[in-house]
Structures are given as structure tokens and as C-alpha cells.
Length: 423
Ligand code: NAD
Ligand code: UGA
Image (cartoon, rainbow, N blue to C red; front, side, top):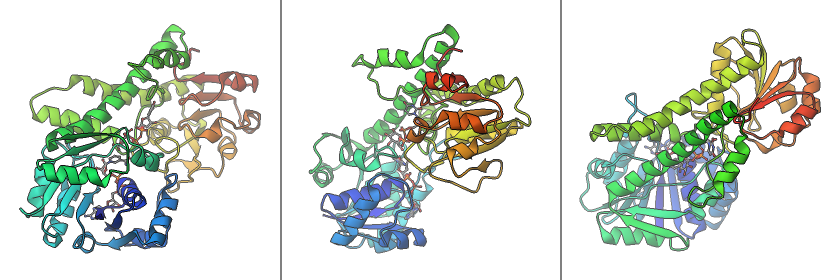
């Protein structure tokens, strides 16, 4: 099939490369010209395992190409995937302006019967917003929310737990499911508002799971239980499952924060106060502060003038995405309290004003009085803690991701604390 993808960010680029991998002829468009040029040279602008290989293979086989401007991508295709941002608006709701702008641009250039597939995460009713913006009554609009995770985007796209298609037209729904016929999984065909709701419900439920386990970790600290064993014991129960039960510094990223807030807002506009989800968001904010409070306690009651090493800046491991990263939120609170932070992240981000970034994990430890682990990168699991200790002024570790072995840390001469681990 011939497919256009509008917006080549984390979702659009994965969608384009994977659809080409499945044998479709894909033309992907973005408004950022440099990005388009780099992609046509086979270079990808993000860290995402396996994606560059798929892009290069797609280009070589002639099944994938990139163009600047979405109007140029759509005139010859059967399907158009909208993968543009839906950031949080000032009032907490989802900002649909990118989706509307993209639809308005492509509208005049579509062939009759084209199926416009909305993959961006959008509130209930947005399929009709797209229909209006397209200003065409001879094309179809279908909702096909995306459930991939950053860091395993290619794997998730090609091995999804389910595919959800929301359409008013049965013919359009069948055509969209046929696009994915090479993928063996459950397919849920429903109406557009239900498909849109499934997406928000899924993200909100996962965020709830993580907030629950973070709150449990705090209980564990208070009662002297070990959260690592608590989640092990809970996770064997098939009704609970072990996924999304890792406590941490609070959840973040480009989706959980905005999507949970948007669902609160969607419910509110519909007359329902989603108190449970508001609680989940509150627990998350408190978790960021709890990291700061415990670290303050560890260094003797005040962070002012204290040199702190921070390992990890991305919102989780295996991605370079810094959007709404809990690590950045914690570091902001540390520097606001007067700490002098040197951070390290394996993806080497730069351009921060309030703290410095070291080139490797050990250098970040130089002269620090405490080390805080904020992202669960594997290299932190295996690092030589003796070498870290030798570079620090005082020897304390606070591990918010449970990646450091407490015994190894204590043997190396550290005072050690971790989320969900009693004193
Ligand atoms: P992103 O910011 O990484 O990428 C969006 C891309 O769209 C950018 O490259 C931008 O330049 C481009 N763009 C903006 N307006 C455009 C236009 N009019 N025409 C062409 N290109 C345009 O965003 P993302 O993380 O890929 O998210 C996209 C959507 O998918 C959002 O609604 C998000 O909630 C949803 N989503 C994201 C993920 C994820 O893991 N990132 C997973 C599932 C769903
Ligand atoms: C999430 C969902 O998992 C995807 O299904 C969804 O498609 C995507 O949002 C989206 O809509 O954009 P992603 O944001 O890539 O994916 O990251 P997750 O792996 O879900 O992690 C989100 C946050 O929760 C991270 O900060 C992570 O560290 C934290 N987390 C996750 C935990 O603290 N503990 C866990 O057990 C799991």
C-alpha cells in the first residue's frame, strides 16, 4: 500500500520505518527541513534501538523517503498517518493545533477515498476535529492510537499487545487493519471516541500502577519492608503482573504527564471529577520532592553549597528524550535549594544552565558529598563503586531506581539508601 506519514518524531519515524519494513511504500514528511535531509541520508535524530537500521534498509529498498512539507507527501497515497505533537495546553487539556494545522495543509491535496489515520494522542471527539480541518467529505478519518514505548519503539510497533482501530466506516476500518496484516496480534475495532478513550485509559492506568508502587515504596521505607521483594511477591499474581511495578523518582516523559492531565480535563469537561487520577498525579509530584528531601536528610539537613553527583538525565533509560524528565525535575529542585550539581548521562545531552554535565559517570563524582541515581541505565549497575568512592569527598549514595546492589555499595564504604529500602 502507499502510505504518507506526517511528522517524523518518535512515533512518526517509527511508524514510517516499520510500515516500510512491512513492505508498504512510505513517504514521510516533516516541517523541519534539516531533519528531513538527515533522514534521507540515513541518519536519525533520536536514540531508538533498531530504528536507524530500518530507516537505512527502507531507503535502500526504495520503500521509504522523506520530504519537507506534508502537502508534497499526500497526493499519491491511499493512507495518511498523522503523527504530530499534541502537547499540554495551559489549562491542562490537549493542544490540538498541530493536528488541525497538519489536516488543513493536507486536505486540498488528498485523493478521494484516502484514509486519514490519526495516530497522535487526542481527546474524545478529535476525529471530527480532523474531519472539519480537512474540509473534505470524500475521505475517511480513522483513529489508530499508538502504544509504543520510547527505547523499545521498533519492537513495540512490530510486536504490539493489540492494535486499536476506531472508525465510523467499516470499510475504512478493514483497510487499516489490512495494513497491519503481517502483525499477529489482537485487533480491537470500535468507534472513534472509544479508540481515543482506550489510549488515555491505558496511559492513565500505567501511570496509576507506577504511582501506586511509588507510594508503596514509601510505606516500605516507613515500616522496614524491602520494596524489591514486595513487587516480586506481588508481580507473580497474574492478575497484577510484574510490569510497571518498578519504583522510582516519579514517572515522566512526553506522554504520561500530559496524557494523565488531559484525561482529568476530559473527565472534568464531561462533568466527572476524576479524583483517583488527580491523586495519582499528586503522588507523582510528591515523589519528586521526596527524593530531594531524603537526599537533604542524608547530607545533614541542608543542600546549600553541597556538591551532588547525579547519574542519569533522560526520563528513563534507552532513550535520549529529556521531555518532562523526573531527573531534570529533581535536579532543578536540588539546585533551587542551593546544591551544586554535576550530572552524567550516557546520551551526553548539553545546554543546561543551572548544572554542569560530565563526560563520564566517574568524573561526575569528583568532590561530591553524595551521588543520586536518577535513571536506570545499565552502565550504572556494573560500575566500579570503589573508583567512584575514591573521587568523592563524602561517601553517600541515594538510588532512586534500585539499580545499585546495596551490599556492594556498603562494602565499598558508602552510606546507602534507595527508594523503598528501609534505612
Ligand atoms: P515528536 O515531537 O517527537 O514529533 C512530532 C513531529 O511532528 C516533529 O518532528 C515535528 O517537527 C513534526 N510536525 C509538527 N507539525 C507538523 C506538520 N504540520 N507537518 C509535518 N510535521 C509536523 O512527537 P512524538 O513523541 O512522536 O508524539 C507524536 C504524537 O504521538 C503525540 O500525540 C503523542 O502523544 C503520541 N504518542 C507518543 C508516543 C511516544 O512514545 N513519544 C507514544 C504513543 C503516542
Ligand atoms: C508510555 C507508555 O508505556 C506507552 O504505552 C505509550 O505509548 C507512551 O507512553 C505514549 O503514549 O507516549 P513512554 O513514555 O515511552 O511510554 O515510557 P514508559 O516506559 O511508559 O515510562 C514512563 C515513565 O514511567 C518513565 O519516567 C519511567 O521511568 C516510569 N516508570 C515506568 C517507572 O518509574 N516504573 C515503571 O515500572 C515503569
